[in-house]
Amino acid sequence: MFKNIVILTGAGVSAESGIPVFRSDNGLWENERIEDVCVPSALARNPGRVHDFYNKLRREVKEKKPNDAHLAIARLQKEWPEKYRGSVSLVTQNIDNMHELAGSADVIHMHGYLFSMLCTSCHRHFSFDQDSHPDDKCPLCGRQTTRPDIVFFEEMPYHMDRIAALLSDCDLFLSIGTSGVVYPAAGFCVQARAVGALCVEFNLEPSATVSNFNYGLYGKASKTVLAFVDHLLKTGEALEEMPR
Ligand code: APR
Image 1 (cartoon, rainbow, N blue to C red):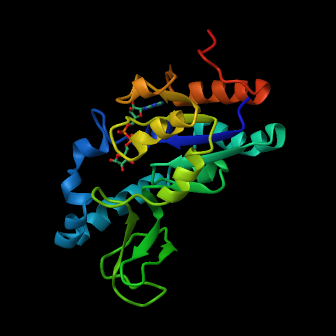
Image 2 (cartoon, rainbow, N blue to C red):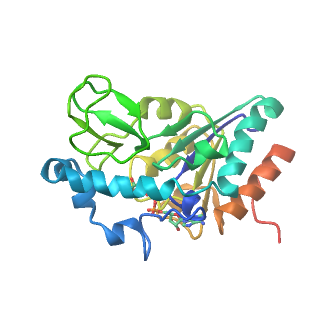
């Protein structure tokens, strides 16, 4: 019987909300070079371009709504602890706010958050939902050293100690809508398997790390995650294939 569940989400969970994934024919990294907007040197070289990239994303995300996969995850977080006395922790690589809008509490944003800014002088984070500019003053220390609160390539993801602790005590690990090519998130399954957790991936097709999982459910997350969560809440057991 499962008790503690850890869920990892990636861009695929928000695809059906109309938020583009990173790696696909029309993905974000097809239209923008990572070196121009998502590495520390880009911020040093052309901060305006980096701010503008995330301003545009933030504006687009503000128009979007959570889909059935986000809603099912939020329902699992609410109902599982009451019914089965366990926990459901949610780690996301996404910088959007779809999980929050779906009702999930305590979303662990390991790659940062579009609705937060970081001050590189006082190292504090603050909520933010407008367009940002490199000259903006930090509301906490007054210096003009704010940047989008996004973890760039070459930077350390947030909350790694907390995530490691959750993975070391989990019985069921669900990886939803991630291509499995960006570490450390792509290695979480191995950590969960090491403590005996059942590991299931949800994707349109097998990911780069499929061999680490016990099995996968393939199709749109709005369908597969919803069916899995319904079954899990009803029986306490993991659904192994999609009902026909
Ligand atoms: N349902 C399920 N999976 C889907 C759906 C869907 N409706 N649509 C797309 N996918 C899958 C794709 O098949 C792909 O494997 O979601 C995955 C998205 O992969 P990526 O675009 O690589 O996104 P992600 O894995 O979250 O990227 C990881 O890379 O660029 C960085 O920091 C960025 O957090 C991001 C990280």
